[in-house]
Length: 359
Image (cartoon, rainbow, N blue to C red; front, side, top):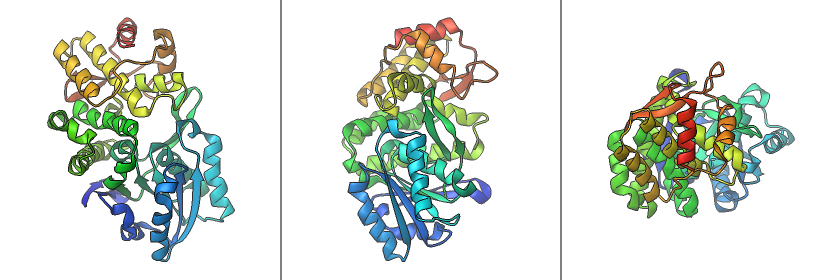
């Protein structure tokens, strides 16, 4: 088992990474306020892991409420969030109950938001079961649901007490989901960790083949990068925004195509290629740099062409982005491979040209 810490003073918490950690409830018990927990999962992960996970908790003397949600990004909304509240209230869960998110990014985001708001705040634990959630969304305390006009528009910053990333569960992850998770892994190399990018390029075949050592290394190095950024800028006032490389374009794809049509990682991959193209138009990247960005995504089996929404629709959707400040669109672009910046320097004509070139 590998352990990292997210350093946030009195709200610091560990990330335990390794094969089989899901089967060790002893890792969870020290982080509980009382012996009352509510495990929230979905109808895809639940049949695979819920029963043995709950049995392990009950063997430790815990009282467990179980809540099963419908699967998918299309259910990351108010009605599904209310199913969590219905379950908590129906079982008379009080303020000392710890919520446990057992699932991918959608489950983790919604359970975190429920924890932030139920009875004005209860503790929660992340147990991510997809590569994308293990390397990104479970760490850092961003919680949210979607709105028809924009992704993750309603939410809160609310940190978990623990992240438990069991790499063995990735064996049951569909290939498409595994590839989508690699988009977020690649992102860390592009924005701040060039040696990691070199490692990914050298080991992409091992990652796609689900080599356990390679996956554990990718999860640890991704989480280490995420933890460092979150510790420096918890509420995204500066550096943390660089973690959104490709996300402004990608969120436009997800919203414009309808939530769930494109996986988040797929949309991010196409968005990163757009961001690289735009960085080249600003004179920051060379043609070879852009080809390097495109090539690693192709090798990972990810899309490098965006959805054909049309530039006008992209720009309309991007105007709702959370990085918009005083009406000005700010984008995360690459000054060089391994160094991301937040900028409003890109002209509308260049943004439009990059969208058109990459769709």
